[in-house]
Length: 111
Picture 1 (cartoon, rainbow, N blue to C red):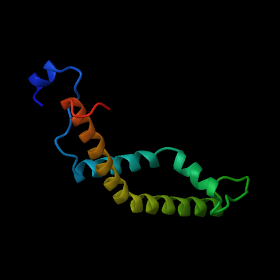
Picture 2 (tube, helix red, strand yellow):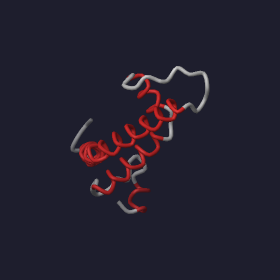
Picture 3 (tube, one colour):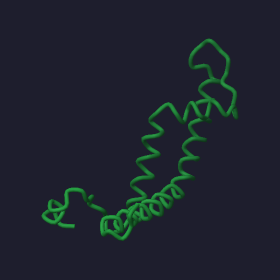
């Protein structure tokens, strides 16, 4: 929809003509990269208890450093494994939602 036509319909959103794999790749890569920058994946990993946190009072013990190395590897490899599925899910779901919105804007769908 051109800028001029869009201005004539202020209640309409500009929608991508097609949701592409590139859209999905950008979403998946940035979503996962940003997620790894937060504490949530680390907290979730800790709650699984697949590796017990070393109960030493000292910081940077060899056991704590090894725990963090293993935790980091598991998180990175898990995120790498889900990136393709996340990309595909994003493309499929975004296409469905955008097509529904496109029908709504045309008046074909009352949802």
